[in-house]
Length: 146
Image (tube, rainbow, N blue to C red; front, side, top):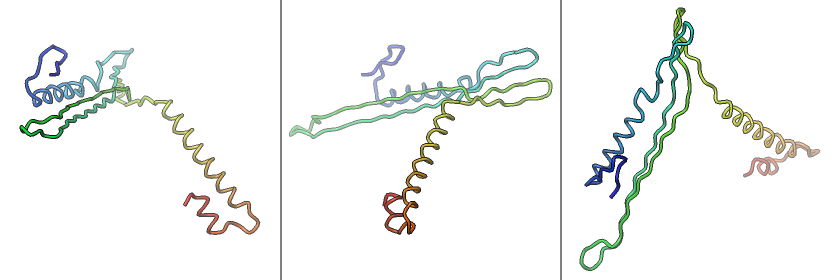
């Protein structure tokens, strides 16, 4: 039997699922997405984040013996949540604006991946076009990996 954080032992699988779902709803509430407003000079800043939640449930079974009892079994569950800052809402006398928070690591990885992809295909294309007569259909198919 699974115990929750408060040490309460659920009596059925439905109660366990209900507890997990209520905790997931609690994680994704507005307070988790929008932080407490802060005053900075003449401006009010409200931090905003992205909350992602995942959940997986499973079960199992096994062969039934001569008496009609199941000899197998198994249950499992897993989940996780993460949050990351994505923007800040800035409210001033002139109005409100949203300032995005850029994840430079993701931008750099995307640029490196794109650059490597382009270099790879340019290299393959240059090998094919170096022949004197130009590439044949067979060479072209070979170059694109068919």
